Image 1 (cartoon, one colour):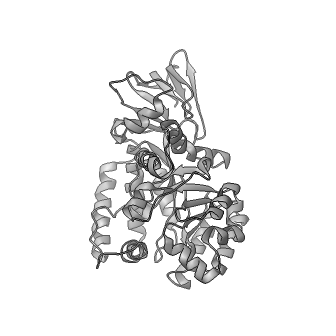
Image 2 (cartoon, rainbow, N blue to C red):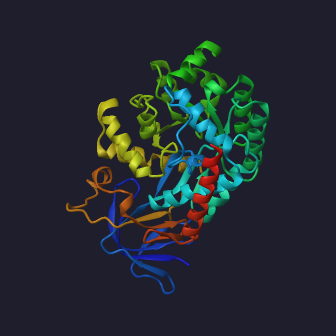
Image 3 (cartoon, rainbow, N blue to C red):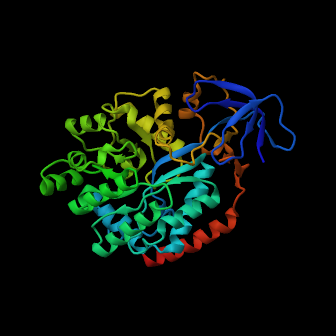
Length: 419
């Protein structure tokens, strides 16, 4: 049944128009919206007086497998560099996951993302000893809560051939029945045969790759010592950058030639400023390819708008400044990526209703400024996801969130015991 939003002040995704009236929201999975004179008979009605309605948000790079990490035990010793952070924290965690934990991670992240205004997640998953069925488990959990998704499994040689092959098999099985990408961890954990196979697999399924790129200087050092080239050069030579569906995450430690290669390529870049600060690896300078950058959260949290604000503030120092309008465009660019590549799930009837009552006027010209300096997850009131009311007054409607979160806590305890 369609939903009618009455007294709705609607701001479009491009922040080009602002209109007040009654919005009829299609209940078709790939439907849209239209303004009507009156709510049609039989439609579910939501009064949006005093609220802002705008297309919901999306996350361009996440790690759902970190969904149970909040408050986890400290590592055996304090890491002193980025590789040690991976070895002592994240690679210990991903090795400990099983299917019940993976499902709980996906539920936890989906609920949090929805409450932060997002209805779509591009995820990069790893569970070396529970690879089989992992992407299917995540997809089912996100579907339950009401989120669209574009998933991949993080292929790597770091855990040996058996884990690598299990990840490859899960990737192939998943892409046979779902939209998705071919994931790679990072150049320094990917051999030449695996890189070649991943590119061939992506081409076979007419999709792109999703890989961490030069997040830390160690990635470049390894590539120079073992492949006699820099990371982006290696990926370019392998054909990774030829697909407009490819996502390069981070892209911090680049030289001018690598920046030029990315600028001239078909690939997109995902920025995660908070994670980069947390790991003390540096910051993205996107001045060579500003129109290719979209915003991810990298497993830190599921708040896309918060991540966009962090990127906006970081850009004031690292990119010579950024206007709220340009920050808004970067925040919304993930939708351009999904739309231009015809991925499903980020449809026109995905909406967030914001209970935002600022002390200053809202105009179409200053809306980006309100997003960067005023609106937060606390203002997310309701969510319509592919035409269905998925969040109502900050409560999930398609699932029993209390029961799911209780299970998340139980699974977190199991995971922490293993750590």
